[in-house]
Length: 131
Image 1 (cartoon, rainbow, N blue to C red):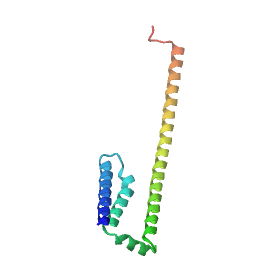
Image 2: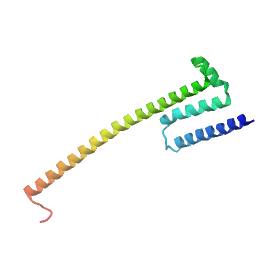
Image 3: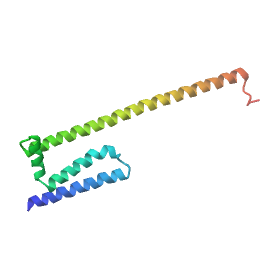
């Protein structure tokens, strides 16, 4: 009886988490490419709750002797996948920031050159607006 209550509670939280993730994607607060690993993990956890023998079967296929070790293994794989996806996102963002800062620096340099040319032409020909 107690085990079924825990399963229902865990299932409830997993479904709420999945709906929450999908709503973030729908509102465009998160990009789908960054949430795929979370969605995939959530669905796998729902399957594990609904079909408890799934983890035992998966552990036996992978040659892992204990379901607890299988859970630790999946946790490590999940953590590595998240770290990798965040590293890729950070690398892309760093590259975009570098390009944008170079563009801003070039724009400021061009503006400075234009101002210098204007001031030189005013000095050379005089300010015609004030006459």
